[in-house]
Length: 343
Ligand SMILES: Cc1cc2nc3c(=O)[nH]c(=O)nc-3n(C[C@H](O)[C@H](O)[C@H](O)COP(=O)(O)O)c2cc1C
Image 1 (cartoon, rainbow, N blue to C red):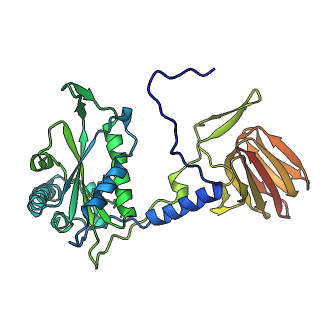
Image 2: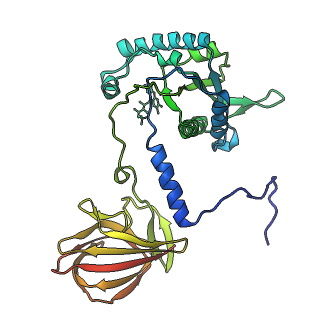
């Protein structure tokens, strides 16, 4: 019997589930679009309708926040006078930073971006959005309310704002003159709010150029952290001290050895192929069913040591999960097998 929660709830009516293929396609095209996002430092003064900025702010406002306290406040600046004041104050801080305060190491990190203390974009771009983090809020009766995780929450909202503006076809620059206290004074915000960053928004200048920088590859940005261990016949997920890829992500000398033949909500099927001398780097396995299409002589290394096994054609097995192992084809024929993983 389910008990009614003692706080107000509503049905989750707006959730959308997509078929796996559509999920893949939506994400792939979203990724393609997002991968074109660049920080722009040369802006056009072409106007942008204000409602576009306001819709983007509504996107930011959908961000999750610690205890739902929504500890953010955005000031949209478009007036020439105010932009000029912000530029002048920012350049004072930036000159101090570049000429005195910045350690050599920081200047070296900034060198590939070509930034300096001149900030003409603060006047050229049609909008500056000053993002403030509210350290605490006030109830209607004036009592103070502490905000939990305000930095994380405001960072998430700002990320969503940048994403929304990019989706709209606008360029942004995340600007953090340090310190930014001058924003409280110029924009009349209370001391309970900390300036978080200044987002410059508009169209890029026609001849805008951007630094030639690289992003991390998928392999270097993540490690598959789910290790499935069989404990008394029950599979439990956990984290091992060493985080390993799963069989699909694990390859050999930078090349993939397994391909995804099928995946839906219930099952994933991989085909893994090992020509002689090719192996499968150290990886973990979720519970799976294995089937050898073409056998071969494989050297297996796991927690119990190293051994060589002859996998016969049509051999099959069931595993409750393998914490780690690595495999090398030490025979003279190409071995191929299927891995079927229930979800
Ligand atoms: C928290 C934060 C602060 C930043 N501050 C500045 C800044 O003050 N000036 C600037 O020109 N770029 C600034 N940037 C932009 C970064 O230099 C830029 O995101 C990075 O070089 C990667 O380039 P991309 O955004 O084109 O991928 C900042 C970015 C972040 C996330």
